[in-house]
Figure 1: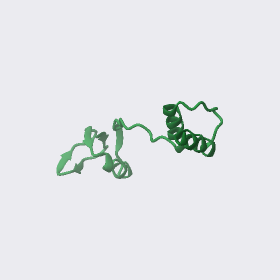
Figure 2: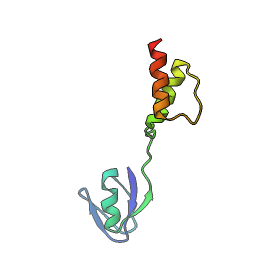
Figure 3: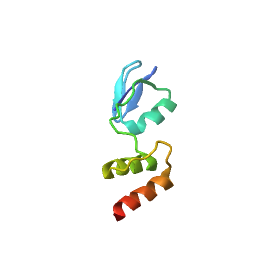
Figure 4: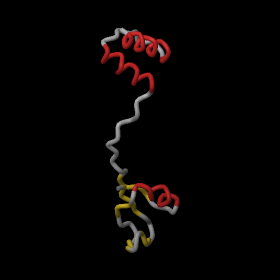
Length: 88
């Protein structure tokens, strides 16, 4: 939930808020409320980890298999090394 404020009286989800009153708004409504003239007082807190890239996932798999690799190895070389390690 983000905290939003307006310089005018607004009605949001059945409640009327006087000017400069801070209220909580649904994360999905923030963009529309900003377009309507609202100010974001506090951004919603996100606790989601960024998704790992394919290269990071392959590096994790190589670490689990005990494969020593160089930092400049790409997807192709790591995939081959992992397949070779699993075949043994």
